[in-house]
Amino acid sequence: MDFWDYIAGFYDLAEAVNGKVYSQMLSITARLVPKGANVLDCAAGTGALSFAAAKKAKSVLCTDLSENMLKTAKSKAKNVKNVSFDVRNIFDIKDLNDTYDIVIAGNVLHLLEDPEGAVKEMYRVLKPGGKLLLPTFTTKGKGKTLLKLYKLLGYRSKAEYSPDEFKTMLKNCGHGRLRTKLIDGLVPCCYAVIVKE
Image 1 (cartoon, rainbow, N blue to C red):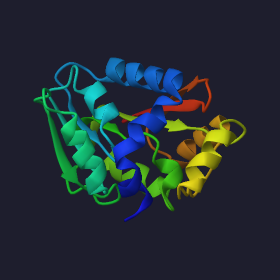
Image 2: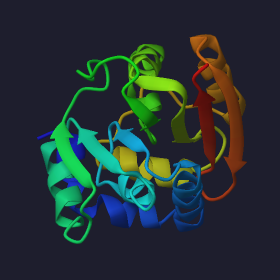
Image 3: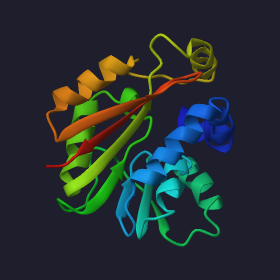
Image 4: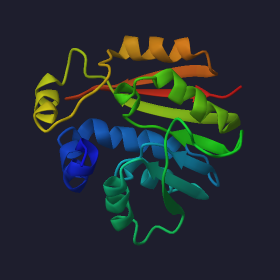
């Protein structure tokens, strides 16, 4: 059992520790999803961003590699009719080009060996004019205490970004128009949006 399967049952509690930032991240997500949108949420964990998107979306596909995370997400979706679930790999999405109005990948790019490759694959399935939503906790410089606790439980990341480093990495991907907003808190979040041209 890997780290994500192991913590699936109490992942939401761990996120609540950074509640102010998390709440703003969900609010921004709900606001950015247009009414009637078709949404893909990659590496969705327990589905918080999927459910925020579902408030206005026509449909949301909540995906993750961890079956336990998706099981937890499904258990929270009893009264939500427009969210479906599937085990999927962010590097091999298996949809046609230009399929989704919104693609979300929250707090996952720092975990990947090739974040640029993941951005490229998500951008591929995004419709022209669509938005790629990439909120990411920026742990470099702040949030060290919480990060140490996660590491004791087995958490490992491939990168730690400052907000500027995260923006630079996304700019270097060379896709679309990038804008960002910093949400400050215990562990800050750089909320990045890439619009497909």
